[in-house]
Length: 190
Image (cartoon, rainbow, N blue to C red; front, side):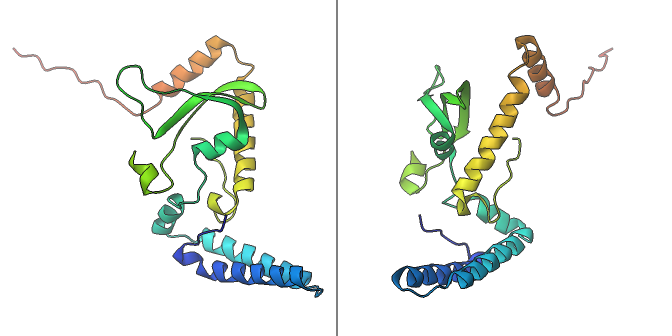
């Protein structure tokens, strides 16, 4: 898939175009330009790292909304087997933006739930933090899938040996830690 570059990535886009042109030249001729390719690739990686280390809040938002970022179904296809999607909430309807179902991760049964926005207008109509590769998830699917694989394996290994009672207690403690509340007593009406 051809990468779509954002406006602040144009310098990287130009380097990547040059790299692709040189690869084509190398494939079509007997000229060895592998050292030039290596130098340009390293320069592209360094420039990408520098750009992504200094993003503005708006640029972060643009990256988060990039149309080529992997979605839930991409992760499911790359990381899980035997996925059986479940539909509907048994009371009202089926929310097309939420994907959930039973699957196997590294051979172990699990539940997968995530959101799935459409890739285009037609589709759209109807957190442990996982580290992203340099340049964000849309630039390197394989690295992102590898990072997600490691994060899921680590999370599953942390809980798979716990008893049901321990799991329920942890879940209870986690939910009790969300938000804050203050108990207010009614004033005496007398």
